[in-house]
Image (cartoon, rainbow, N blue to C red):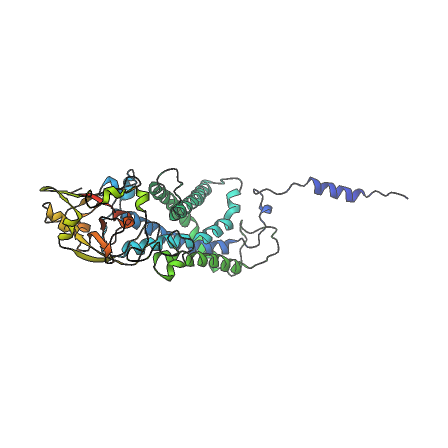
Length: 425
């Protein structure tokens, strides 16, 4: 048998063996046939509207804490000029904070698939070499880095807060607040640079050649419109399993991804959602018993100490108000009954209701103290509540007394109230 050599084949085989696989810095590495300016532009336009609304509702949410009223309300004391827009938070409509925070959280979670798809569509640009071809290109790349990093930071910290996983390297409030400004500044810069091109891409019937288009694409298994339907389906699923936390009854049971979704925590008049339990807050039964507890009210004419029985002998009033929290969950209106805050102010010499500083029996955790503006104290629906839905407050809902104010974030509706100091803050 004669062995024949095939030098041509061996040389070709040798070249294939020496060829190195493409790296992410090579356009040949990215082979998806879906990437292109049209898909990126569609996702970008959706995010343009969604992120703008997220930012605005986030600013409104921050203003609801009245952070410029007192240091205990201000979790971002070094905000400086970033607090330029702050205003006195109103009490009407009484569901204002409930609506704003429900939109903010639900929209943020709903946009997650869109954000991930957008990042996937532009990921080749993160590996483009050289990093900067001109000053304008360098500015664009810098805005892209801040945009991607800021988006991931804001969405991750937001989701962790909603899920009550406080694993941040600091307080959620300053991290999310300052991160939002950095992210939105990069977002605005990116929009200014890219919006005209994005609008042109949307009007194109045929895909233009672009650095996002793969030079050697794989065979498509789905169309770009099919990919958009897939992303939209993911967003719809997240929406359907989140939005119910802002409602009661059956809809709350659909909020499978929310800690305050599912069944109510109990039954009866006190069987609605709770932010923090008495046990978590370190409330001892001995401190809330009738013989031990006293409400200390201080104002212009001095200090009075009231037992719960003393409060029950004062004129009592009712208000139907919800509880709404920063994590996006809320309850329907509950029927509260107690003493008006403005009547307590009058007991210590304030016929014209001023601000009030409220202190709780709570031993640990944020917002053990809270400040309320004069307009909140003056509202006739603002109560030091003693009962809810016709029954005494349960320990978890703030027994022996709690504050309830229309349109205020849940943490400002202080539970287990021990002291109230009326006066200008």
